[in-house]
Structures are given as C-alpha cells and as structure tokens.
Amino acid sequence: AQSVTQPDIHITVSEGASLELRCNYSYGATPYLFWYVQSPGQGLQLLLKYFSGDTLVQGIKGFEAEFKRSQSSFNLRKPSVHWSDAAEYFCAVGAGTGTYKYIFGTGTRLKVLA
Amino acid sequence: NAGVTQTPKFQVLKTGQSMTLQCAQDMNHNSMYWYRQDPGMGLRLIYYSASEGTTDKGEVPNGYNVSRLNKREFSLRLESAAPSQTSVYFCASSPGGLAGDTGELFFGEGSRLTVL
Image 1 (cartoon, chains in turn red, orange):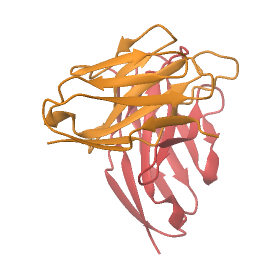
Image 2: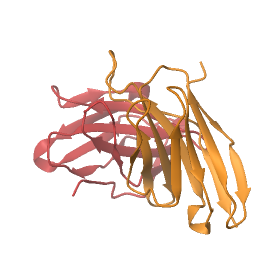
Image 3: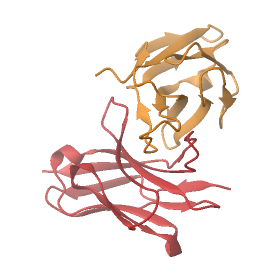
C-alpha cells in the first residue's frame, strides 16, 4: 500500500541552526515527491518537488530536499533556520498523471527558539 | 490574486444539520479536490474532480457529497453532520494536465467545521 511516514511529530531548533525533516515513502512506481508548508491558520504552500533528474532539489525560502531511492526517503533540509520558518511541514507522494491524488504524511510541526 | 477561495471559514453545526462548503478557483484549473485535516492524521482526500463534469471518491468519502458546478466551483455537502466530521476542510486545485502543469496543488485557506 502507498504510504508516507514523517517520523517526527514535533521538532524544536534554535534560530540559525540547521534543520532536517524526515520523510519516508512506500510507493510502487517512481513517485512524484513534494514538501508543503502550512503556517498557522493558512492553507498549504508548495516548498519544492521532485519528479525526476537531479536528486537534490532546491525550493523556496532556502529549503532543499534529497531523493534517495535506496532509502525510500525525501528529507527536507535548511542550513540556517529563521524564526519565520516555524510552521507545519507535510511530505506528499503521488503519481504524476495530471490529477494529483496525493498521499500526505501526518506532518512535522517545527518550533524555532529565538 | 484570489487563487482558491473557500466559504465559510468557520461554521458550527448541530448533529444532523446539513451544510455546504463552497470552493472557487480563478486559475482555470481542470482538477479540484476536497481534503480534511485532522490532528495527527495529515490531510486525507474526501473527493476530487479530475475535470468539469466528473467526480470521484477519495480516501474518506462517507458522509459527504460533492458537486462540480462548473470549471471554477466545487462544493462539498454534509447531508447529516456528525461529530466525527469536526475537522478543517481544505479545497485545492491543480492544472490537471494543462500546459505548464508542475504537479502543484493550490490550496484555499481552509474551513473550520465544528459539529456539536
């Protein structure tokens, strides 16, 4: 069965520290992989996506993610976290068929300490 | 730029009451979706519409109905609300194969529904 696992429910980091959010997936075919961010009271916004090609993808707000097929992972990273990065982050997987019935992970809530 | 607009943003219902959540997008997208978000469960797909005139069940369709009124609008109806339907509901859209489609879902700001 297709699934997405985000093992960390909450993560707390200090401002300026590096960040890595984990995402593991189970998917039968080559997946389309996404990271979305949700600020409090807002909808989700796309941070970055992986379809094919270079396994290290760059996104908005200084985020990047690396696709590792052998580990079925798509971890999100940022070298230096800003207080404004406090939000909930969702990993999603799906097939790129034109209609995106994605499967979302349960989310990781990031807290940033000043 | 409006993007995806949902109404209402907040609603309180009593068990057994009915209501409709409205969603409209102004991006000429083909595909539209309704998700619900519950703590610790992420987003789960209720229904989607791949294109105007079609609708299909998602992961958790029971207790809901949808209507794709036209290309812009996709509504979600609760015929007889239950406390288990207390949730935050998100409408989303995607180009659905149109030129320039990058696979991105565009989300509304959500509708918080409480069923007492």
